[in-house]
Length: 304
Length: 322
Image (cartoon, each protein chain N blue to C red):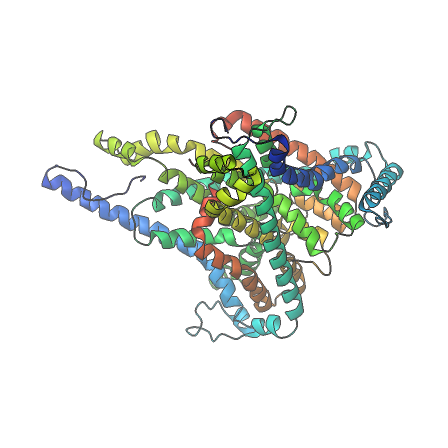
């Protein structure tokens, strides 16, 4: 069903034919909505269940399943007390702060470096030995292929040796590099889609290439920059393996906290659920309000 | 991409200024460790046994030279030649991990694609609340795979207190999810699909919306049925975007670790383990850095071969991947 099923087609057919079409239309609508609702439940129920778990206690979890607060169970704030006031408070706050610094820092850094590279690749012709624009672009993109596991242990040794181990800055630097390919990809596309004439005029007026980039191109490339920034933030916020190997007592991020708490909290589902809910909420909010930028970033280069 | 006709004149160093920072940082952080890793994979380097004495003091270049000297000495002292590779050849756990990576990729991704295609086609119609559905369907992709693993794999699929297991118990059915290898892999594929489907859906939906509506009007006038239209027009036109999404997902599945780590820890035994998880366990948790790095470098070669084969077969359909 690729095409909008508008009933008001150009059908100059007889009345009986129009009638069957109308019926088909209704049935196809019902089936469409049915499937959409089924997937809505599949997509949202796990999130919903996690949030309700954070308002339960041992009795509610062992006797359930209870689904709707105030209808079949009375919510308690045990889990939230645990992470906001006692027990887990310091850990959660540290992880939250680390994740925030890493995500925003690597997002900004990757945006600056990636935008410049993307602009260069869109606007200049490079010749580094045998390397042309196409090869440089491919070099950046090929980083997407590299499994983190292939570099993680050498990086661990190097991080320990250079004092970057267990620091937020080390992790941030790493996330910047991992985020770079996608930023270069999005921004090269973004700049290539803008008219080149204004920048040419700026160069004629005596601006440097950097000046033309900063004054003319950057201000109009905002949509791509927002998209690229958000994608790097999402990646950094959710990344696990680097954080697990390269941090220990002080620079751990939220995914690592969740992973370690799973084994130590055992059946304290309410605390786990509160931690997990707190960890995913910022990104869910970003997803809800900035959906169009995320879609733009994900589809950059793939659809034109 | 061809930039001719769209390019600016600039001097060599001005142009270089734009790409060099990103290039150099990538070289230092990614390429250097990869090469270093190649050397380490021929050593018996261990996490606690092989220690370096830190970068020392002084100017950054002296410290860097000192560091490289230390590393070089450590590599020489722990050099073990092909011992790691021979051991790897007989390592059944490594074979299982490698096999699982292929299953997660080549069984998991087609499932993701089929569901995502269905959803994209549904959302491409004129329906009420389309914006709402689009945003809601994207949300799973916002969640960290670690959190996905906990909230689905641990909380919902819990064998004692999970809603499914409890309802099943009322009906005198005992539900278990991860007690055998194939079952564990199956449920992990499902969870990973839940997380990944929005990504594929977004790509396919964008592909559908980029299609000129005139084509479909022409098809309607020609009297093509829906299936016919889909088979002859929509699907072929969607092929480049489809393959781009599929290739990207395949690449990501070869990196899979987080969901598995939380849900099964690779178990039972090592039946649901992937290479990344095995490298993490052997190199970081057990501290056998030399051996685990050998695993990782062999895996890197496998991944490169797979990607080259993919690009050689479907690459010409993959639109503007680079």
